[in-house]
Image 1 (cartoon, rainbow, N blue to C red):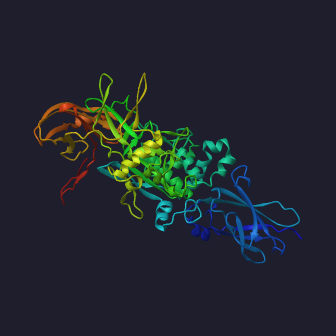
Image 2 (image 1 turned 30 degrees about the vertical axis):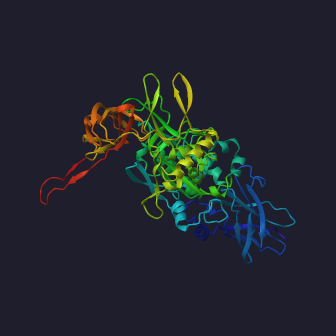
Image 3 (image 1 turned 90 degrees about the vertical axis):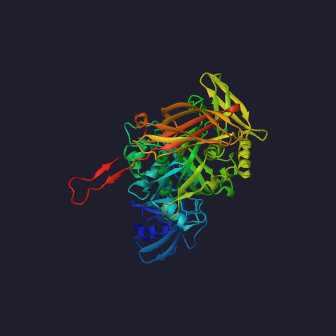
Length: 625
């Protein structure tokens, strides 16, 4: 009798797509999720006899092998297996066979080739049935990426648009972003990002075999979304110069970026900043089936020397000394969180994991960050993989200002330990409102528990014997110096100050503000106030100075005084960047040598008023910008 052959395949795309929540993918292949069965109907050249079964082979990646779990060979049976590929016969007619295939919940994700042959005494070669794509499965309880809430699965896996929050702590703005994970070619591009990674280029078979693990896959994507080591997707630019590319502020979604990278033969797309990297990474991870959201942190620390403090060196006018200050505090920073289990750390660290594709610091020699468990950050467990100290500092570093004297000595200025990591925000589930998730990252600022966690994190980094924080000063031509500084903040000053905006800061108008000083004591105080102002980028890097003046102020007991400040439009208009941001600083030198630094970030508004023409009047309405 001639061997039985499969003559046609019905992939049952509609019913499988609905069952697997993959019906939105427009690609030609069937897309399914791991750990869940999908049905195929096969047309046969003849009916199978009693002794015959079909033997299936699935394989993914080059050099596929059973040893690497990138290939499986299995035959039709009556029951499903637990942790292996299975095929169960569901229906049989004379010339058709409907089978239900199931992958293990920890199968490698990616594009698979499916082939089959009949079992018989005579050897038959495999017949290729076609390709399908296997994704992570947040609906499968045995999958590491399982997410129990249906509302959250819809929001963090299936929603193809969202909101990214930017601005400053006191003035948070929402920007819409099109993730577009179901648009034309995007799934194919996301899979090709994995295949462009250096680890795949070095050893494709081994790299593919690791793609069962969300920790591995997200770490690869974190590195590949920026272009710093590997011709990844987006090239960063923070200097306000965007020639030969698109300003980061002009992107409104990920699709155009990903398609441009792919069609341009993997040439990095110009330009991105943190929210662009986060938007693109959210698209890629949602597309691959990992629940992911975009998170914005206001007053975000960039701790370059891993000492859990932002050490800022200023002159007597409060101006940042760029050549001394390696650490920085950004007005805001945007990253991602993805939801999965941490088999490498233990179940208490399951859940949201921080991932950051913005190229700030290298992690194991590559510009990437995470996954770092949010729970580990909250508890000060900064010794755990990956990049815990950096993320901890972003949300909970102490902000310490040092006044640098001409004799190269330094003096600690009163600093606010509550300044870093404010209003940590993400889009709410099912609505466009802002959800504050600061409590997931740290205990309430100033609470005993938060200080205990901070001390614990310092000890984890520097050893149990560390009594304080180690701070490094690095200057050109001078060797690095280390010294210990106590964890306790400096003594609270006897004079407080804050900037108050007197008129809304509108682009094109003069800026009118006041510095409000208050004497907290029952004795008179003299205060030397040195004011400075500069246009800045959102990373708080100064661009040009626009204010420089001094005032001598006498404050009576418990007295409050206002120093008026005016910055004419002509003074700032030439040096304002697209970020439209200005930083004001007041260094207050109080009687008895006390020092107080007051700062304020201002974002200028573009106000548009439209005046309608009266009915019947000639001429057009007048619009003013």
